[in-house]
Image (cartoon, rainbow, N blue to C red; front, side):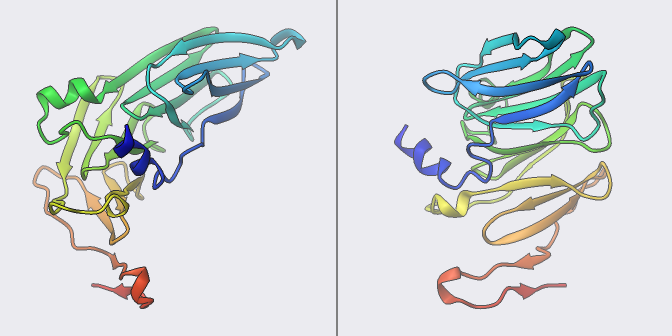
Length: 220
């Protein structure tokens, strides 16, 4: 628990656990609740009344709620990241359902590279409705096909023993194609393009130590 708290201070989206959207011609609010913020609540003002449409306990504290850029009034897709899991929800008509979910303690048993790490960022694809990318605090990353519950690509950046908590921070985002992903750390910004044969990319930028107060170096 102590380590988790120290990791979380570098979470780029810590506290971003509120989403407001339009759904079936009414305003819908999705937020975390409960003593440990592990409960997900979906409420709306349908028929001019504030009503809780759905509530579920995800067991772990919610740290991120991210709405798909492909949402419409009829179909709302969003991702919820907790300290130990990722869940992709869809709201279509009056149906609210989980499309895909990853529980990292269980995933660690079948993918040793995960190694009981904590997801620190996730993002839904702007190209395909249920695809998403995530990264954990040990450098593991994966591009997911959520509709078919399939890992399209995964990899792990080497992280030296003794790497500080601050240096373990990661963030991720899709690039200009559905097969390109940016991975950002305090040291670098890397662009990965996934192909049949994947090459390890050089850093686009190298961010020198803030303590040295040097300007970032541009690498080509």
